[in-house]
Structure formats: C-alpha cells, structure tokens
Picture 1 (cartoon, rainbow, N blue to C red):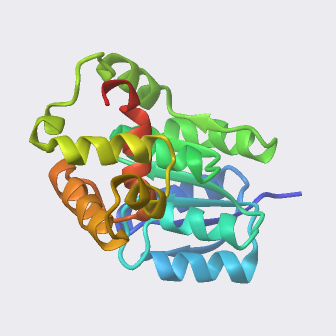
Picture 2: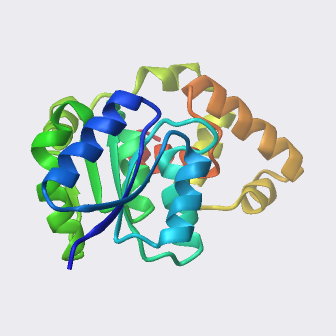
Picture 3: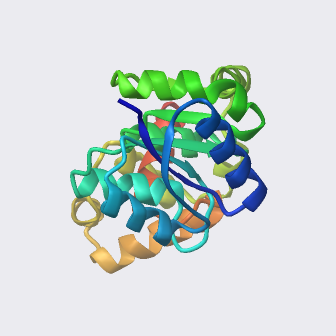
Length: 210
C-alpha cells in the first residue's frame, strides 16, 4: 500500500520539487501547503502516514504543528526539513517526537531513507546536522550568559531543575509576576523565541554551566 504524505513549505520551488520527486518514487501526495495553518488542516483532514514540514512557515511553524499533533494524539509522523542547524530547534524536534530532521540541501538525498525509518517507527536525523552539532558542541560556557545577572542565573538554574514558576517564586519569596519578568528578561538576553518550552530546553542543554 502506498504511503500517504502531506508536504508543506513556504518556498513554492521546494514544495513543487519535493512533491514531484516523491510522486515519481511512488509515494501518494495527498496534499501540499505553503503555510502552517493550511498544513495542519490537511493533516487533520487526510490523516496521512507522514507529514514533511518546513520548520519556518507563516502562521504555524513545523515545530508548532508537531506539538499540536502530539497534543491531539494524531498518528501522522512528522519529518522536518530546514536550513537551521541551531541545537535548540533540534532538541525541540526530539522533544515533540519528530521522526525526521533533515537539512534542505540534502533533502532529496535523504528523504526516502527518512520516510522508510519513520514508517517503521524509527527516527532519522540528517547526518550533517548531528556531525555539525558534535563539532560545535564545545565545553565553553555560552558567552550570552555573561549578560545575565546573578539572580537571573539562579532562576535559570532552577528552570534547569524543572521547577515551575510558582516553585521558583516560593524559593525567592517573591511574586510569580516577578519570576515571569525574570524569565522574559532571560529569554531576551539569550535571544530565544517566545515558545514556552524554549527556555527550559536551553537551560537543560546548558545545565553544566549554571
């Protein structure tokens, strides 16, 4: 039985190229979209085996779609394609049970292998992204941390210990509003996105330096 696939990318050439390539390989493309909302609606409607999504799209990112699929117990297996090599995005992908993470420049070379792995229930991450992260994962404390105050570092340490904002507020004997302000300042200084999970993932990745 042919594998049903939804593809979403806000670059029309990439979308068309990948759709044509996979169709020529015998896969059944049940829908394609150029923004995140349309992509999610296609997944809900068609319940495809696989959804191949660009990470950065209007309205909803590929990561947000993966998070929504996980939350709503949709069985579609998510594969992300991207130019991004940021470790935080890679860790978020793993946290949302994404089955594939492929760099766009190698998409055509790796996509079939990735789909085969996903169908069998195994995750596949582009060799380029894993080797890049290994080569760039030094033991040096991130320079951005120098901008944090002592209080912010203490807050970050507790976040790395998976404490809630209320628990951190209790530990400091301050209001939860104050902790939310600290979190907002830390996110700004670390130049993270505003997704609720981004700060905890970053804190966990850099726990050794706190």
